Image (spheres, rainbow, N blue to C red):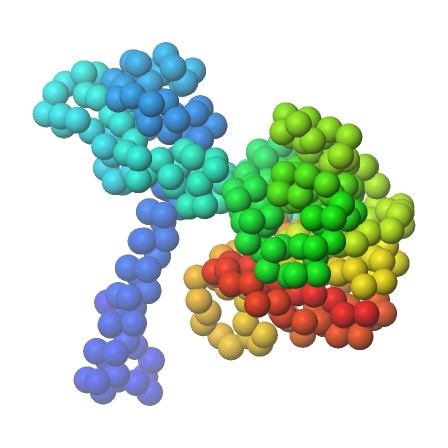
Length: 370
């Protein structure tokens, strides 16, 4: 039993302390189980096992042969996933190597379907890729330095892109942008779009698919992202109309655009004011600058909801270290509250920031007002 402080040794205080201790212990046990699930989900995603098991039920040997995982590890992974409730077993009483496992349609929407709005496997891959950098992160926490984006490797880049891919392909052009009448009209008539910090290009591609007359230019400073974005656009038949540029959006982006997008990137920028000032320079008179970033409360209040908890966790492991890998850096972190963005926008020459009436559990949308 936890030793109680001397000033709280009455029966009521003792009971309260025991309850609080037990609640925290239960919380941490749940967190450990969740962390183990997350890492094993990342393993399964790496080997494509969820897709294999959704297509057909497999024994450990069949899963190993289809995925490239060694048979003994495949058996252990399947049993772990089944015990965790993620994968179904057809007959648990059979010998270990004879049991068949499968992923249901309902679970495939979360674990395997890259087009599903419920697809969450990329978040497990983000955590795994961040955990692999723990020694460098610890050094950064001590020195005040950072860990650059490219150090996290392709697994992080692809996971980040895959997390937003279904949103950009399914909602950006069909719901979010059409809810802004002047933007919808401009793009339908063949307007031009600049996508700043485009990453693997899915927002640009989503716009290009939804608006066949529009021209889109994506800008990013990560060469691997630009290469991947270019390949994705070509695969969707958009080469030539949706183009990507290895360029610093703060200094090298050029042209005149009806819509400038900054999709979940402003909080990562070492110098967000410079990029937003570039957006103001790029947008045509009467055009729109739209920022999508995390939906967090306007003020810090202590214990927060799951979205805020997630954003702080990602901030410590990914976004803040990446921002601090550049010097100088404002070091925003993932939890960019609306007043912070408003301050950056005003420094960049905008008059104000309007919160747009687009509802989403994780993201908030802003229009920067000239």
